[in-house]
Length: 82
Image (tube, rainbow, N blue to C red; front, side, top):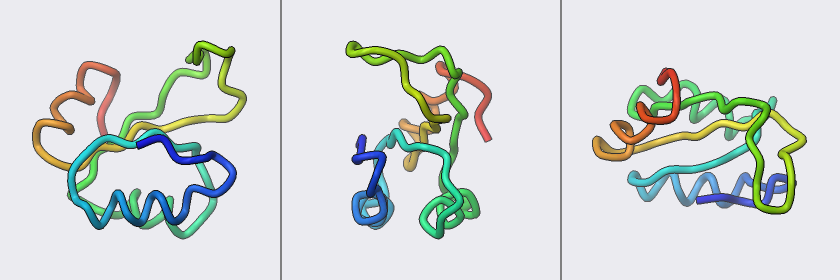
C-alpha cells in the first residue's frame, strides 16, 4: 500500500484494519504514525534517504511497515527491522 504522502490517514487506517500487507509511508508527527509505531504486531524499517522512484528521488524520510508473518519476514531483506 502506497498512500498519497499528503493525506495518508484514511489509507493507513484501512490497511491497519485489514491486518495483512506492506505499506510505504512518510515519517510523520501524526496520530496514524503513532498508532503504527506503538502496535506490537507491526514491524517497520526506516528507508535510506537515497531511495528513488522511477520519477526521481523521494524528498521526505520514508518507512516501510509490515503486518503479517510473511510480510514482516520480507522486511528483513530491506534493512534493520523494528
